[in-house]
Amino acid sequence: MQDAKDQTQEIERRLGLDHEDTLISLNRVGVLLRDQGNLKEAESWLRRDLEGSERTLGPDHPNTLISINNYASVLESD
Image 1: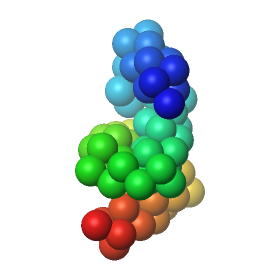
Image 2 (image 1 turned 45 degrees about the horizontal axis):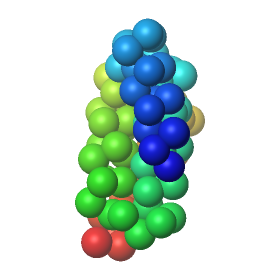
Image 3 (image 1 turned 180 degrees about the vertical axis):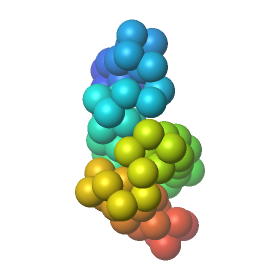
Image 4 (image 1 turned 90 degrees about the vertical axis):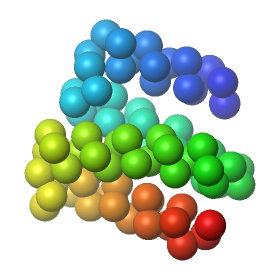
């Protein structure tokens, strides 16, 4: 798990928060954390992804809708 976090942080450092690859990586780490039951940390990663997706891709983009769903699933589980 730490490797995935480190890789995502490196992607963000190189490409920036608003790059689609960064957003996808944030989402994947958030989903992994959620699936491991680490809801508080998952919520943080998925919130960053959702905020970036809405800002960069727009509210109707398929990746933004996936982000909304994944973020909601964490909030629902908490």
